[in-house]
Length: 167
Image (cartoon, rainbow, N blue to C red; front, side, top):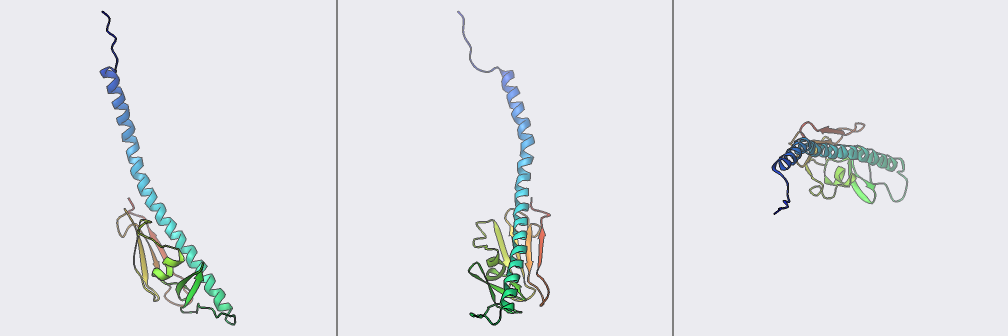
């Protein structure tokens, strides 16, 4: 009687398991680096958004200051006030957004930081106040973007990024 056997031999199974193991050993480090790269990209995106928003807010404030005699009266002053950016009143200090939720957060339209994987902390409405934005999954303070409001009229805010430990 002839019996027809179906299935894989032990050698075939060992070869398949070996190939899958090699592929997993090569792919796993790439996936780990992909998470690190994603955190760095998020920090860089926030950094770029802050630079752009600060420049746009300053331009809006400069327009307000140049149009003092208009009606309604401008709300941005040389040392404070607010600037209207897309219908949102952004609080200002020294012609730039303040370092708080109603300042730089409003300028970059950061409405739900937790959902975006960002943890903002600190800040204030005064000159020189510092607000930090830690990236979820990174190691604080080495995966963060910080915004320091300008310390005096004529100075610019300091926006810094640290991605040294976003892994």
